[in-house]
Length: 316
Image (cartoon, rainbow, N blue to C red; front, side):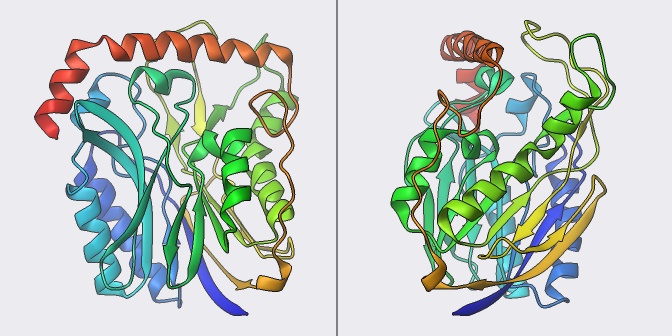
C-alpha cells in the first residue's frame, strides 16, 4: 500500500487570459506543495477558460506551448505532479488535451477528450486513445468532464486496471429556476460530477479526484436549441475519495485548494462492469438525447469551418 496526498485546485479562470490563469495556478500549486501534496489536479481548460465562441481558438496552442511548459516548470520546481487540460492545436484541428508532468518536469503522458459535449462540438474535435498515464505513482486513469459520464470511457477505464482516477471538469449549471428548470433539477445537476466520481470509486476500488472550476460562466453559445444560458455558474463541489469510498475532502462552489490523503491499495481494486444507459452510465430523461443532435450539428460546422482550419494551422 502507498499513501498519497492529493490536491484539487478549484480555480476561477479568466476566459482567454492564459498568462493570468497560469500565474494564479502557480500560487495554488505552491500552496498545495507547502502542505505536503504530491499531485495537484487543475480543472479542464484551466489555461484557456471556457468561452464557447471562435475567440476560444485564439487561446489554442501547440502541445509544446505555454501550458505544457508551465506544467513542466511547476512540477520540476515544486517536486510534485501537476496536471490540467488545454486547447491543443495540431494538424489543422483543435483538441481538448490533458497533460500530466512528473516531479522531474517530464510530461509523463497525455489523454484527449473523446466526446466534445453540447456546444463544445463546434470548437474542438474528439480523439480516441488510452485513458490512462503510467507514472511512478501507479497507473492514473483520466476522464475529462463529460467523458467520465459516458459508458465508452468508463469501459475503457474498466479495461485499464488503474490505481488512481483523475476527473478534471469545466462543469457549469444554472443558478436560478426557470419554466424549464426546477430547483430540484439544479440540485441534481450540481451533484452529478460528485455522483459520477462515486461510481468510479465504487466500481474500481481506487481513489478518485474530481476537480471542477468555480466562478460565474457567461458566454454566448452557437446553438440555442436548449435555450440561452443565463445566470450559470461553475458548480465546484470538487471532491477527493479514498479507495474505500471515504470522503477525504469536499468543497462548495468557492475558489480553494482541496487537499486529502488517500491510500493506493492493490487489494481493494475491483473491476465492476460499468452501468449502461444509452451512452451514459446513469439513467436520465429521454429528452437528453436531443444533445446528440446539437453535437452532430456542431461537428459538421466544425468540420467545414475555414476560420477554424486557418487558426489551427497558424498555431500548430
